[in-house]
Length: 303
Image (cartoon, rainbow, N blue to C red; front, side, top):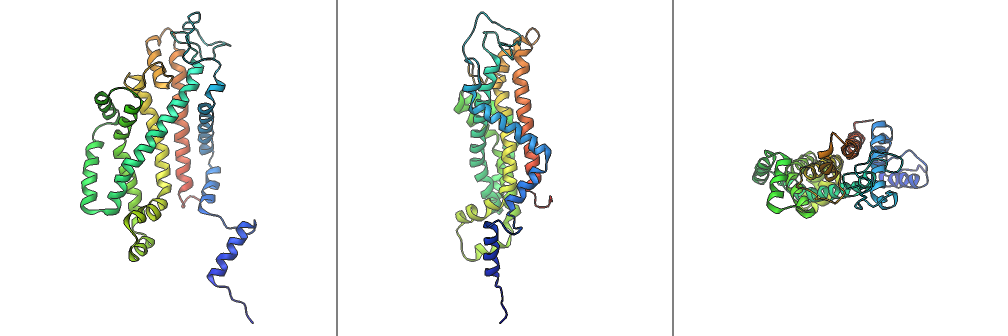
């Protein structure tokens, strides 16, 4: 008697081969990881991000000095074997302050990325799914927000709410609202016309469940790339606001705040500005390289 294989039997056999280490079955995530590993710029960006993340987590172990402890016997000291990045106008070790600055910059930019994705992403998802008048109303409001530069919007919100970390998070969230909304809307529009969406509507799946179970998971590639880009943009904005004196106030060792305290000594003690500037530049470069590589890896057309 001939032996026939049904589609269900073939699927089960493929699953068994996967878990037994046999067969050539690759999930989309594994294929994306293989493409990512073949991209040298993405690997460099990932390495930079991992190093900065390691420094941020273990800053209290790696830092040779207390970042806020002044040393009046070592004021504005040039880099040497003891103080690798020199000291500032109060004798504080700049190397230690830069290590702790990674913790503040990364954590705050990650928080602002999450809050921006939750607020702007929700608006963009609703606009992309509902369409029509709802889409038009939300997008016209986002046009007003987008007409104002992010730095100017953040400065205006901070001027109203005052200085402080919560106020800074709210200001950056509001200034990033239009970018997140448009990105989520575009991602939802690309998957809204899929056959599985029409099938789900045919069996009367609720709107909330449709968005969470079908729309957002199938748009996760584009959204992941945008979140990496938004993380870098948030870090730049946090440092910029701190540099002009309306972000994180001294003596908190944030990179923009360190720049603000060293700008008055640019000509006489350039090391006070060079060190935090290099930290910001290298970190942003890492995020940009990783974001470009991640975009190519998540694109199924890149083989």
